[in-house]
Amino acid sequence: MDFTPIKTQRVYKDIIEQFKMMIYNGNLKKGDRLPPERELCQILGVSRASMREALRSMEMMGIVESRPGEGTFIVNEVTSSILEPLSLIIALEKNQADFIELRKVLESACAKKTAERRTEDDLKKMMVQIKIMEESYDEGVRAEADRELHRIISAAAGNKLLIDMVEAIAGGIDNYIKGARRRLMKDPHNADILLEQHQAIYQYIKDRNGDAASREMERHIDFVEEKLKVL
Image 1 (cartoon, rainbow, N blue to C red):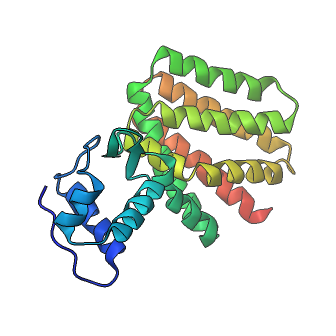
Image 2 (tube, rainbow, N blue to C red):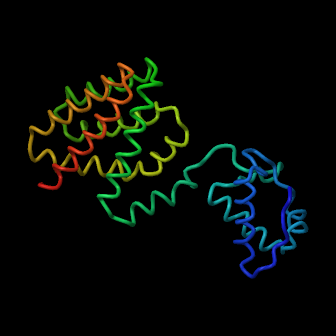
């Protein structure tokens, strides 16, 4: 591991930056065990206090994990803590147009990949939510089924990075769907339109028509956006 001695004043940040660069260039990989803390301090020429601060920060960021009795490792799985900053950025921005555009890009991509890769079990899970939207008279129940259907479609895409990105904005998506449906239900006819759109997305996924599933997801999100502008 070719670490470089740290010389600047913001020591713990420079330590973190060096770890990031080693991950980017492939010198550190998922599951790699790091040298003992004392050895890292000697290699980098830093104090144990700075090293501990850097390791604590990276653990909070979800980059490394400490295993009692074993040592410190680069994480094997991406955790929500790595993606949390993106979720917070979205929450702070409060820019609905940007959020909807991001949602449309990610969810249409998911719909396309899900159509190509879905299993019979995925279809069954989707149909359960469609049935709830068809049969329930409780808007709260229908809204939850709406959100769950979108989550199932994203999960069935089979692309870990794409799924992680959707998960990063999941809180915003959930709140958006709930709030959007509440406003859209001021016109009861919209409930039927939303159901038809979800049924169409499901059918294209079932038929393995990825392009059509992607277009239908975009159309669905565009419909909601346009309706909300006049409500």
